[in-house]
Length: 404
Image 1 (tube, one colour):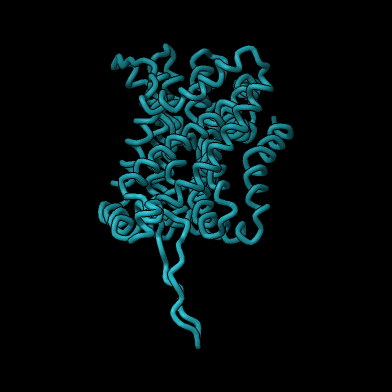
Image 2 (image 1 turned 60 degrees about the vertical axis):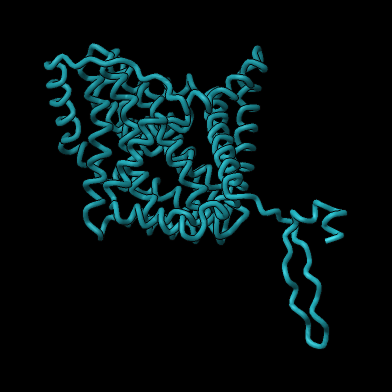
């Protein structure tokens, strides 16, 4: 008591009991360095860290855009080979770090008559693959912590594998039968006859809040070259992502442990895949970015709060939700082809879900593939980095050079 009064800070120090060794008296409890924060304080800290994480993602996107925004649009022009179009869609989306931006660009090029509709179809599919690079990069923030990294990398790459599997089946079918484009063209014709019109989609409050620190840094660096601006934004973004991920995971284990963890998984399990897909769809429409939705899931999966099986349908819903930007942008154009290519994106994502999700034998193929890759990456972490660079940069570049 006297010590507590003389040194009040000792009251905030947690103690642990040190077991007595044989032949020695019980050891005095030693203080640990960890302070016990109240749950509400940890929750507020997690919310702040999530905002920091999303701001880091936005810094990363803006940095890459500073280097490649013009190149992304140039990639789409002059490409006629379907596979080259697929690779162009992947690489352009990686450059701008947003499938919404790349698909809106494709819609604009189709609407202006610059890009033929049939050529744009595989580009849309490529954009679906390219958008998964953001959450895969986010998973690398856990690379120094084995179990967290294994869960995070599997959670990120299951999205990759789903889109790769969907493209591997649906692209050949589309090239042979044209079923996706035919359905989309008929729907676009019907909507055009019905006089449906729309406007551009504005920023959501969350997206505006996340962009604010990026805009402040851009103002400070006003006048700097694109290379300097892009480099600084990239460094800041990566730093914020890695630091926030480390603290998010640590605090989430405290805030969402035990009963809350089980409750979250129970609710999603009882609600079924459709309910989880709706969660992913609504959240993605609200924030206007599937990258934000899926990237938020990564630290939650890494902390063990959310299982892969329950996170999986949320990512599928995010896949569908991300098509809303291109759909609304296309409704503002005069050409029905622009609306048709935006509808192709939506129909493609819905077809992928209908193809793989209903049958249990096929449903969890992306999860199994992701878990296997995560085990291999855990034993050789350099392979994880090689996978990201090879799949999203080198392979598309080589494909465009050889086929484009």
